[in-house]
Image 1 (cartoon, rainbow, N blue to C red):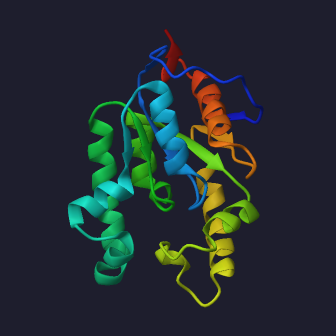
Image 2: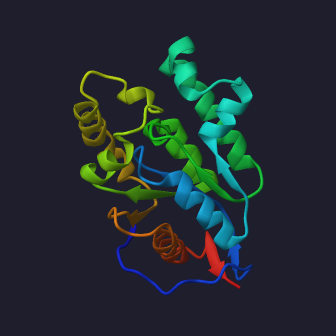
Length: 195
């Protein structure tokens, strides 16, 4: 497992990279998977995919609506199907929901067909990013902070199994987070190389 904690100079947005495997961003809600994923895809000149957005599009419902109507187990089954399908499509950057990496089947599929990168952020950073949003069905509880803390404590050991790690300290810009992820990916020439 490689860990990147330093800043690097800005890398130009160009086709100066060859991506050999889909990069799957994993981590807690609020870690920045979608924002960093979009910027990373633009930097590398590859497609950006979001498993949650794909599920919502296929169901013609929001994730909170799916949770409410069909329950979390149904959602997780659909999530696994979508992740498998997206990994079989064109190589790119795939942002996943916070719970996706918890399923052993998903972790195995991601490792086999792509590479996982954990956007690691501490609890306070995550809370500051999600506390004013009501789009997180798992946080619709009497004490959302306690719920987030419980999820964090449960999930961090699983996220630690990711192939690579990029630190999100809460003050780093999206551009610098992209640099950190690129640095991590460049430690794996089977995933990303400079042309």
